[in-house]
Amino acid sequence: MSAASIWEIRIKESIGKIDIPLNFKEILEKQPFEVLSITSEHAHAIKELPLIHRDPFDRMLIAQGKIEKLAIITRDSFFSEYNINVIKA
Image (spheres, rainbow, N blue to C red):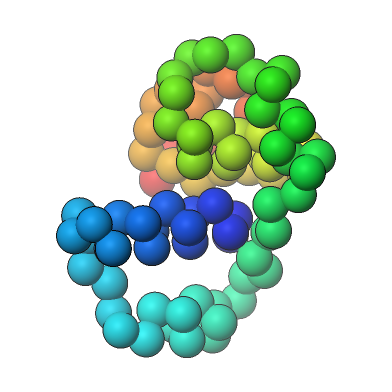
């Protein structure tokens, strides 16, 4: 799981767009996945992405997927336009 996803969830929580459990951090820590940090390489890779859309969190996820050669699980159909491995949720 990308740190960018956690960041986006916390922003949406702070502006009242979503409700998450009070122990969200602890819940994530118990899950059987690793958290992928955002690196400078990921940030620089965004420059190479076509401007299909402007959501900064999605663009970071796409850059991370490309750099790390990971699939991205999403409902958003536009991710496939970036020529990355997408698993439809």
